[in-house]
Length: 217
Image (cartoon, rainbow, N blue to C red):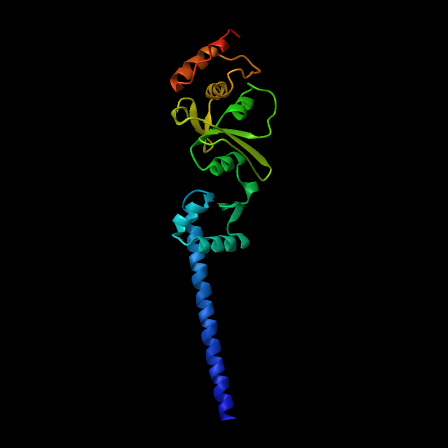
């Protein structure tokens, strides 16, 4: 009877130690998780690439980072957009234009067909959002399609006709026309173009001129 009580007491002590250890570990993990999510929240960003997260959380081990991200995604603390690209919000809650910008993960601006359509220079509805960047790329996220045309750095980083609109660098209609003429000098527009303005902007950007288009409209 004595030994039975001793064993029972030892078992109870071991159980208490095990329980305290697990509670402490759970609290520790929760504190780390809360701290990591708080770090993201302070960045005033909702979209992050895996390298950004590794740096922000100081996680150098790739396997540890993958396991951590999978757990956080399963717990809906973050949302996986595609491999290596995550969000603090569901895709449906993110401006698709901003989503495209962050997916390109480099300098880019909204231009060509998207800007031309919204400014009335083309009437045909397009089913993708168009950017100019250092990458030639077409991709889809969720139900939204994107297209990026590659532009040489000497033109890409020229700021003429580009401004920030709703957190996205966006071309003016004149800049979008110049960009489109660079990619296709015979592109047709559906409303009159002020060719003097276009010629002037082409010179500022140092684009090749398109004199065959400079006609009265």
